[in-house]
Length: 365
Image 1 (spheres, rainbow, N blue to C red):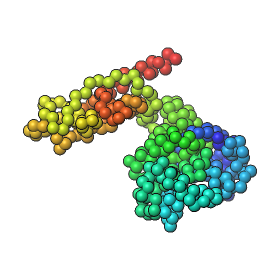
Image 2 (image 1 turned 90 degrees about the vertical axis):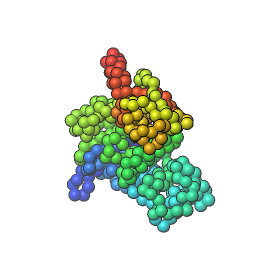
Image 3 (image 1 turned 90 degrees about the horizontal axis):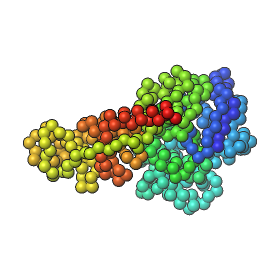
Image 4 (image 1 turned 135 degrees about the vertical axis):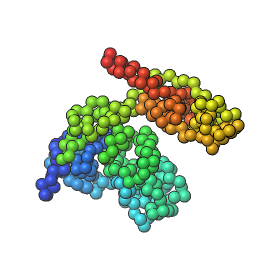
């Protein structure tokens, strides 16, 4: 557990970056610091490993004041991931990951074995071990950065906007990978971002900071979206917070409707009708409209229309259900099972009825 007690950081020019911060970072969970530029989120993070030292107050890790131990020793027990990965350009990927264990006195063989295990854990192919950072994509470099931070198995991981320098698709993949790793490893993670969507996706709890380093609200993501404490938090979270909040509501009560499907090579469906095209394993491939096939006799891939997002019935939320319905060209979202096979259809009306049910239950509680 990390605890900030009345922590202030005042720089020599008089600038107050963090002002009287009281915050408890729960062990084994992801806590996200979010806020506009100049709110002190990176300063707060860097005070934990004494890259910056507090002017006032106390920061403890598992009950121990961080100022009571050697700074270098403290940092070796805390993983640290930054925006540009910070890899050593002259070292191979394997040796980059093995850096901290070797500093801790591990043999080269043991450190490299650990590094190889971590490469697999973060989704890096073994053949990348002998490459250099310049030979990797930005997303691959960030995976190396995460692996290096985990190399000595630290209980705490500090992550300073680690995914902000990559494109949106890679960023989403890295976020999903972090959540997968956390489900396996259970680290205490303090994560900094300026992106509220990233904050509510990753955080077990989210701390919103104001400019000047003042804590505005500290809550679970669903509560933050549903009950912002004031206009600043409301405006920062965004006007579409109601839509984001659907991500924290279960879609278990939504009934699945029937969905017509055809396979490639099947006869073309009747005119003026949308049907879903599937492969031999019933995985969705796209949509087809009878009016668009230009005289074709059988279904082929040339006339497919992208199908929008898919709704996973096993882990879906009202947000994912609504997005599937709204992004589908037919207005009917595709529901899939754990193996990605078509399970049925959902509509926006189904989601809104389920939302009404949730609200009635909350009002009655």
